[in-house]
Length: 138
Image 1 (cartoon, rainbow, N blue to C red):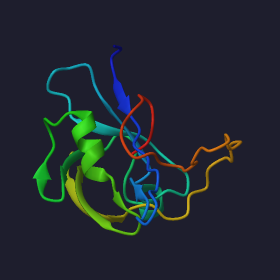
Image 2: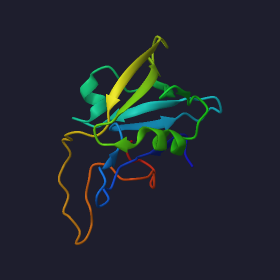
Image 3: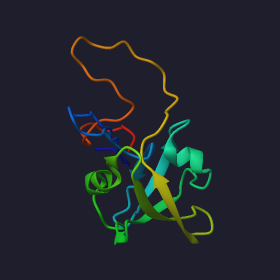
């Protein structure tokens, strides 16, 4: 791989279940062994961006009270995904000051994403159920 790992988590809704979605953020880890996961970018109109508190470069410290400083990207992605409208509690550290701050993020919600043609029989969503490809938002 390269210097950074990236993952995107999205959701596909199942019949009779609410869609499972993330917070609308891309994460990456630096090349150094002790690097934390940090925010690579925020999806315009996504839950994380709408909070107007999380910045690109901020490091994720914990999710729902669980320290994720050494967690794998896929583990973090799984923790950030949940039912549309459910809350996830995150602690981040500012990229410059390294001071930590806590946020409560409502998963999912209205997303301003470009429309893509729908493949026959495919479910399209700004999110997918599991972190299956690199470079996808959580």
